[in-house]
Image (tube, rainbow, N blue to C red):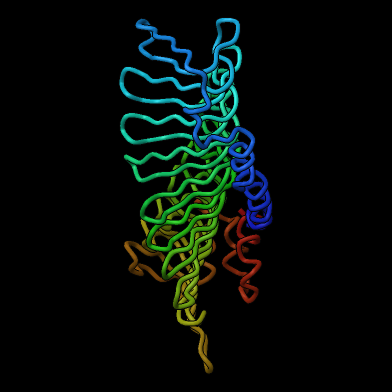
Length: 317
């Protein structure tokens, strides 16, 4: 998980570098957008085939400088033109109430910009390439949810932080808008760090619960599935074994620790219930018979150093 935590500062640095309003203020000051319609020479071009009317500066029969383009659907673009195309700072107001302000290049959104999706209650601020979010950005929703992180081809890709309105948050890797790879997911009463696949907790991961219960092991679709170690009752009850759909299912070892005596059960579980109990030697022989001898060292190990459990499990399997 260290690789994820080490990238927190990296994301914050990139966001600060690109997403401060200084860049936008520089555009506004340079182009003096206040009273833009009054400053534009009243050259008017009407084009029925393209369904817009252009009011603005013309040079060599091309749009050049400040201009307004009014479309037949009542959308409006106000901004800088060069060689007949929007190039520079501009603002595009859509008929549905959405609007974009930022940088354009060759009639496409390129560079820094803010898109306000009024109809969705969403604001995106960040970098664009050919009308698509790219590199880095901040996504803010009306319910106070937000995403800060990396984008590729219009989708969350790379490292990013997402915080939900209920206070839950995820920090980690993304792929095509999915939680995908390693990440940290903090919920109200528990914290998970480990692998994700297509928005699900899947692969190896560690869950820390509010009552200090712990689980180290494998998951599938948000449920314990495969080999795992669970610590209960301030680590006085320890289960090592196999799980399916959050239930103990398969061979396992259950240990009870107290001040006077320790109790150990080797057995076979089904649907969270202990069905059969074995002597230690018989238990290990059964593991060998089914090709699980690599688990014997894990069952034999003393788990006093919690910090190293995950590394030991992954190295052993």
